[in-house]
Length: 116
Image 1 (cartoon, rainbow, N blue to C red):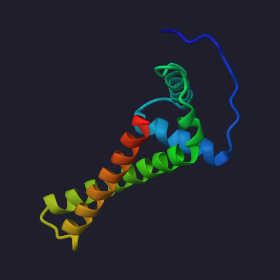
Image 2: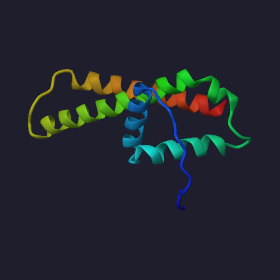
Image 3: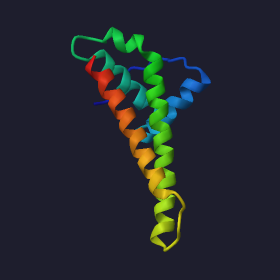
Image 4: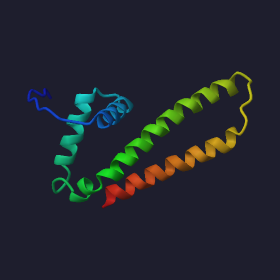
C-alpha cells in the first residue's frame, strides 16, 4: 500500500520524543508509526473507542513504562554478557525478578485497557 496523502501533525517536544522512542522500538519510521497508530484507532471495531481517548494519560504512561522496560532489557543484555564471560553481578536474581514483575504489570494494564 502506497500512502500518498500528507497531513501535518503538531506535537510537543516531549510527545514527539515519546513517539520516536515507540516507533524505534517497533522498528518503524516515526511518520509510519503515527500513521499506523491513527489508522488502528480509526478502524477499531465500532470506531474509535471513547475510553481510549479519555485514557490518554494512562496510555502515555504505559508507553513510557514500555520504553523504560526496553532500556532495562538493554541493561539485562549487558549483565548477561558479563555473566557469560565468567563475571559476577551482585543481586542479579533479585533484579531479574523485579523486572519480570514490572513487565507483567505493564502487560496486564495494557490488556485491561484493551478489554474496555
